[in-house]
Length: 549
Image (tube, rainbow, N blue to C red; front, side):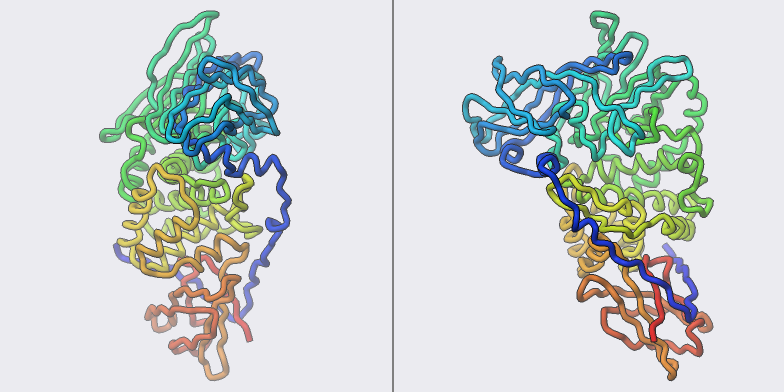
């Protein structure tokens, strides 16, 4: 592919640099935070193999009851494990080998005591019975909880989104991202005339007592707890096919015609993501878009869609370039999570940038597939206006703490910067695809990402990752232009021994040059009569530029 360079002319006036904010370092974390986010012996002693979630939902009372059967392998002999369920939910019993176990509750943690030691490498099962009125979200999906709504015919329209808040808001589980069950059966009973749509494949629709129908879905790939979902409504179903991948769509009846039109974007999206990231990772579970009473969420193989069957983000363009109005943000962004977030997952919520940075970058990848590289770079550049540079992108480990919301578009612009550093588009696309293939179905940390790109490029990219991820400020390129018309450049960064190349040219001559710059002043071999004749590739690099005396 022919490289396209986009340049910003730099004139002789200073550009301000964002100041670093270290408030994240000053945060205090509670016992509840460590119970939710930490990995102590009561959690590391066992590995979840499967869940069988069997619940009944009463829409009018907003009440759920049932059980989760948890199959797990013992990794270290233990008489005590930690599961999780929000305090407001009632524990009816925990049954193991036909006997009720004792337990203690501390905040949202449930410590279960066994009468005998569970032996290492053994496989065990317990049933956790519970009931209650789950938390209702005030503004889903930004706060976790259920959404109890109605369709235009006054029928229940219900969804749930719990990313960050925790899946233990509505069902008992080992609520830590490092441990994904290998498979899940989801059985949700709802009043007759309604349908429940969950992750995976529909196994059975069974009439039960009291005017309820049970909908049984099965997931056959590893899945994160927060991705397990239910969607209850008077849905209509239509289907499509992408090569060997089944495409299933569940929407409100009044929106069927609009959905058939809007969801045509799925085919070109799949063309793009298959080419750039690799095959869809959950072939056995299929791909679904499910209409929800909230904006959207990346629920694995059952992507939540609530964007009103319109292009953009609720009809707006986050980049303010007009490019974002050419495609449906929720279809593209949330579906891209199937590759980054659902397939390749962060082991700790502190590294949620692994989910969001790559997925936000995937928006520009789709733009490039559809409209070309120049438009993709312009889209990414337009998104810089909504970057806050307020605190680090990486959160605090072990305390259920996310970093800055800049993990989306600062992260996406960081990846675009890495593309410029590598300066080889064929290699860049190969790396993205290999990255997904290498870590598919795994939970990883920041260092796994950094080590991958270092090893594959034979470059030391760690200082670059560290500057963008661990500090609020971005690299500042400082320029000096002396009376002899000699140009000097250096990077000002929080990271020591920072080194990154930069592309520039004399606009009069048009010859493109590249120099590797570090934290020391470096003389640049370029003939300039005036600094206004210098163009620096600021579109390809997310940096600030300032002239110093």
